[in-house]
Length: 118
Length: 111
Image (cartoon, rainbow over all chains, first blue to last red; front, side):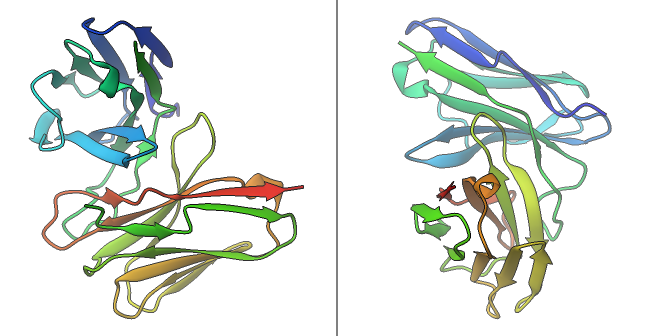
């Protein structure tokens, strides 16, 4: 079975432009997570979904960020307008089980989308 | 504020040497996972520990979970260049909604 698939792998854009990152989770995984990774702050959870419903979006930095999951096989993370401080690697991950609440679900990560905002 | 502290931040050793990296918290973990991330890829799970005092072995890697479930260590015996990567611990805390990741230990094994 294919792993988590993300696109694009690399994106270079100018400040103020809209950025859309895409993710296809592993089939059958009910949990989908968006993370952002920087050298300074490490891996930070932005938002996660359970059965296509957003459960916790407290990690979304501000209103410029939005995420959707219209169906079980597709999710997007949108930044509008983008700013230089948004430059980071954005990871999508999926899981069969919850990762909290007494569960120890394994996170399967995609290869990431490296975003550079000039 | 980092809930999980990992040390050392960077480690560079010669092939064949042994090493230990650490993950600590001031809070009790309900569970803890170790992931390894290679350049240009996403993290991959190595192990999950849930019981205080638990020790798990994965070939040359030995994982320990502290008795009080506030710390964990990863020991690598006879390191090889293929062990090079970023080692991340991820902790679940009682009542928390998700896993929290440490900033990682970046290991380089020199041939």
